[in-house]
Image (cartoon, rainbow, N blue to C red; front, side):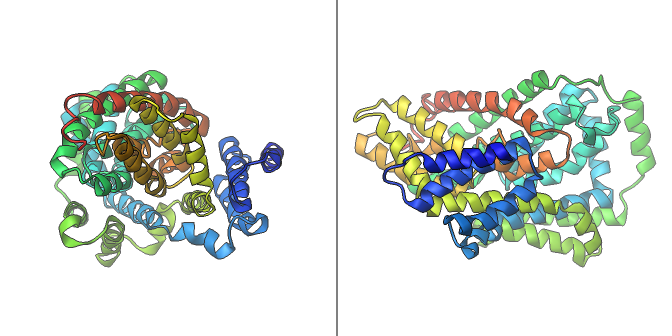
Amino acid sequence: MPLAIIAFIVVMLVPMNGLSYSGHAAIALLIFAIIMWATEALHLAVTSLIILFIQPIIGVASFDNAVIGFANPIIFLMIGGFIIAEAIRKSGLATRLTYTMLNKFGTTPDRSIFVAVFSTGLLSAWIENVVAFAMLLPIIKEIIPLMGVDDPEKGKSNFAKAMVLGASYGSLAGGFGTEIGTAPNLMAAAYTHIPFANWMLFGFPLAIILMLIIWKVLGKIFKPEVSGIVGGNKTISDKMESLGPMKKVEKLSLAILIFTIGLWITAGWTGLNSYSVALIGAVLFFVFKVLDWKDAQNGVDWGLIVFFGGALSLGAGLLQSGAASWLINDIIGVLGSNPSTILIMVVLMIIAVCITQVMSNIALAAILVPLSVTLATAQGQPIGIYAVPVAIACSLSFMLPMADPTVAMAYGTEYVKIKEIFKAGVPLVVIGIIVTIIVLLSPLAKPALG
C-alpha cells in the first residue's frame, strides 16, 4: 500500500501537457489501483471500494458518476451467469454432463484441458464468453477432484490452474470466431460493415489457432501433476451407472438451459440483449424451484462483483476525464507522419491490450475503433485493416483478473493466483498479437476487411 500511494503522488507530480486535472488524477489512480490489485495489498473488492470513494476526493468524478460502473450491464451478466452455474451444479446436471464428456473424450489431463478450452471456446463464438465460462465452470470443478486433486482451493495444483484458465482463455479466443462473439467485434462490424460470413472467414481460423495455442501453452506452463482419473474408465462407467436415468430436476434444468441458450443465439431476431437473457435464465431457475435465494447468496461471488464494478468505474473515469483519449493520441502521434501499416497495427493492438487489462473492452473499443477507421480511410487502406485487429486486441484480456469477468471468475475459484495469471497471460497476449496480424494479413482475410 505505501508503494501504491507513493506511485500515485509521483504520477501527480509529473507534468502532463494537454491533459485536464481530472484526467491527470485518473491516470494516477490507475497506477495506484494496478499496484494494489497486482500485489493484493488488500482484498481486490476493498481496493475497488477505495476507487469509488477516492474519485470525488481527488477530483476524477463525483460519487454519483463513480458508481456508474456498478450499473454496467456486464455486472448483471456476471450475476446471471453465476446463478445459472449454481443451478447446473445443484441440480446434478453438471455431474452428469461431466461424466458424459469424460466418457466421450477420455480421461487424461491433456484431453481434459483440451475439452476445457474448446468447449467454452466454441460456445462463446455464439453466446457471451462470461456465460459460456459460467456454464462450464461447475463441470470443470467436478473433473478436477476426479483426477486425484485434493483441495485445489489451496492453489497448489497445476492441473486445476490449467483447467480454469484454459476455460477462461478459451472463451475469450472463441469469441473472435463471429461478429457476435464479443462486444468489440460488434463495434468493429458496425463501423466497417463487414458481412457476418466474411468475418467468419478469418475469425474462425484465428479462434481455432489461438485455442490450440492456449491448450499447449497452459499444458507447458502448468505441467499437470496428475496422470489421469483415479480408477480410469471403470470409475466413469460405475459413476454413470450409479447416476441412473435423468431426474426430473435435471431435465427441468436442461430444458431451462437450452431455452436460455436459444434466446442468446436468436438475440439478433428477438431484440433481447445477452444481459437480459442471462437474468431471464437465472429467474426461471427460481420460478421452477430449482434454486432458492440462499443458493444465490452462496453461489454468487459478491466480492468478485464488487471488485469488477470498481474496475469498470475506474475505466469510466479514464474515459470521461479524457485520460484514455490523451494516452492514445499521444502514442499515435509519436509514430510520425507516415508510419507503416504493420507498425500502426502493432502499436494500436499493444495500446488496446494494455488498457483493456483495467478497462471495459467495449468502452475501449468505442474509443479505438472509430480512430482506427479514420486512420485507415486517411491512408486509403481497407476500412477494417486497423479496426478489426484493434477489436480483437480489446479482448486479449489474459493478464489480470480485472481484465475480463471470466478471468476474474477463474481467480475467484482460488485455484490460481494473480502472479500465475500474469505468468500465463503475457506470452499468450504476445502470441495472440502476432497470430492475429498474420491471419489478418493473409489472403484469406483480404476480401473480408473491406
